[in-house]
Length: 129
Image (cartoon, rainbow, N blue to C red; front, side, top):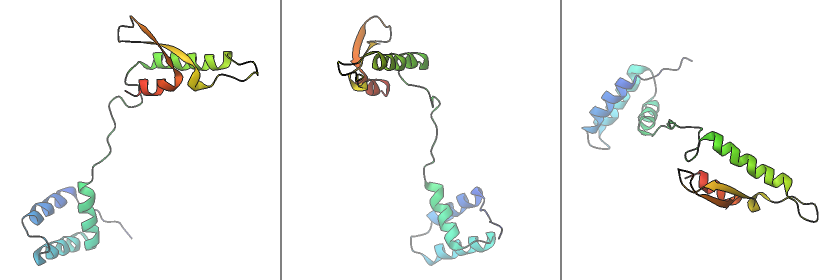
């Protein structure tokens, strides 16, 4: 079976005509049935197309995939610092430092004039601003 699609212009025209009619009107039902017959689809398909038309569509941000606060190079550097702290530190029993307890220096402002020490558990919130 060949799937028939309804042109967007036809849906816009149909919506324009439906808005003028009262809800639950026989005329609305007749208009939907005529449109369905014209395009060789069921009236349910027309209603579905009208519903899909009003749904919001997902759009991607222009900076998708890149961190908002810091450049990717700096972010990778801090991730390397956290990993190095985890690998190089251990307690008397030979266990490694947990990620949440690792402390990393971060610039306090955009100029990088001051530095703040943050625990790795706080980094997630810092980068997601």
